[in-house]
Length: 400
Image (tube, rainbow, N blue to C red; front, side, top):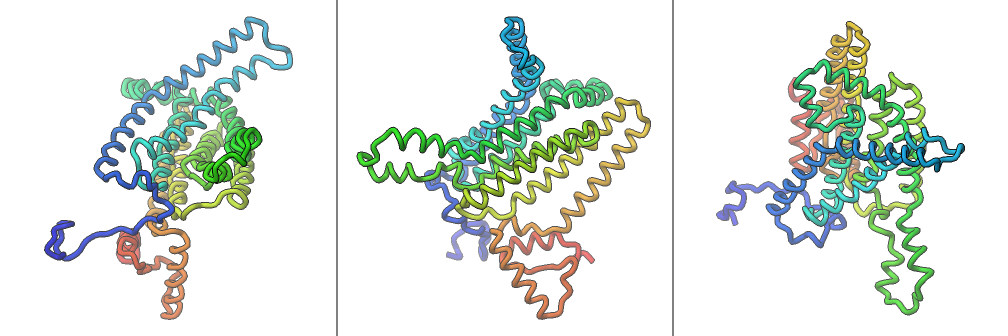
């Protein structure tokens, strides 16, 4: 066995922790790694092309909705109880929200049936990444009302005009994004609380069929919860929350009413997710603490974006200290960002939370028994070599 050149090293091999069997997608277990990586590259290229043209999609939907409202208004089909301004405000918002609502399902199917990842967590990470990218891109293109290619061309020709147009678009599109938040509060959160897939399944199949004439396999399928309602799929739920967070932070200094709308959205989402986590969902396996690091990145993306937006508004108002504010605020946020990255140990990325908690308790007990100070920059020796490596790289104590 030592003579077999399996890893290029004659005396040792690098291995990773085995995945949880409940996390495996057994239908994709026969796929080789090379094929999966090739398919992943192709699918991501297609999704990047979709990102480049997302501004055109938003513009086409907005123009279509506005033209439809004009035709309805010219045909005198509106009563006095429904003013045209309501349709102008909410019809484009509802159409875009419906597209954003079903995009995660498309990403999930691409990861499971096209790329064919071998674990559900990999599919969920793929959905989380691209759902977040498309939602953040939708915010940017809502501001600028142009495709990414047009925006880059405008920035190359005249950066000053680009910043002014971007800031003016932010001021102009505040009502549109506020409508997006209102629709998200009633649409995304309430659909999660409704569990509409189970209701449709039980309402259509159970009353209209004679279950005594059906097989036991069919009855088991009927009693089983739909896959998307068996547990939290973070790729479906987390990007909608980060979407609301970024909109609220961006408009916190321009339109204070957006903070109230954002507070209503997060209050409703907190009630819905807490209820589902306690009484509805049951996770098949632990996914570790990856969501915490995702939220850390989202918060800093929101801070960087709000700094750029506020600086652009100051330039638009011809405030002399706009550029100085931009550099000072960006340096402050960057300093805090790097300080957090150098302080926290990323063991939760590689371990389930319960196992990581047990390891932390064991190391605390050993430190207390040996009278070591663990109040600051403690270096824990984890059992996994990869965790020790990450801990050494991110700790400042070994550099002193």
